[in-house]
Length: 330
Image (cartoon, rainbow, N blue to C red; front, side, top):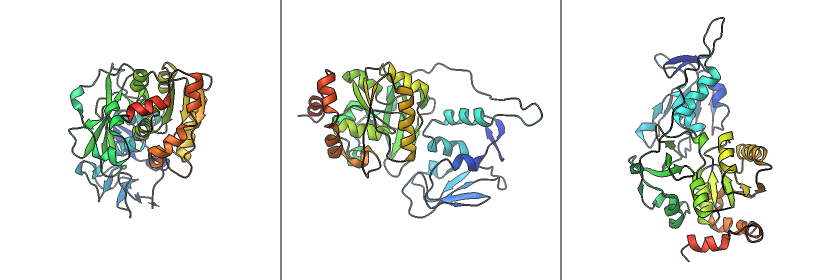
């Protein structure tokens, strides 16, 4: 396996195996590299490659996107790419690689995790986000009321909308920067690990919602909020024990499985069922032939919410129709 330096420590990483865990459009695999459509944008022809083996002065894992919209994402190292694919922070990906591959060469095979001592994460400064309605999110069908509720806004990164991730107490724990063009996103450096957060949990406490749809991405959750239904997001297709504990301690009594309508989403739904069974009432939403909640659109989600209305009306104090009127300004 090729050697890649992570936090100053050279470790052998199976680059190809890591990349094969994800779906690649129009992919061509060779011994030396992967050529495919860019994962960061909507790419009609392959204009992206990743080195699977060292090449001259370049280590394995380096990549290049010739059609990049942002110079910062025209090329980079393996950790940067993998953190995007795994939907987590750069630091989380470093820890994953060190935990998975951090063994020294030699007979003793001693683990060299080189992990940083656990540190106490402090809330990020609110100045990272300037609250504002995003034309991009509006174009994705997300209402202005839902955007205000979530506190989205402008960021110091040109061409990116800032979506805050908060703790249950409302502290700013991380910020997701979502490109308004293409599919690119990344997180604030030094923010809390995404595996220790649930997007929208602060809104659940604020609204005292007893039912919520669990999604992968905040944009899908925001689409549900726009339809008048509370929703949360876990930031990807992994569901950590910490995220499960956060939901268990919340007001949520009914959890609707609403991950993306693909194999990875089905795997996430199963993981949530396994960890949450016995703690909440579980339901599931069917997106039909659509990929996810945002692709369904607000009107379709409102129709699907009718299936949840009896749960609100008969079992809980919270009423979805009342909230729908509130968030839509009626």
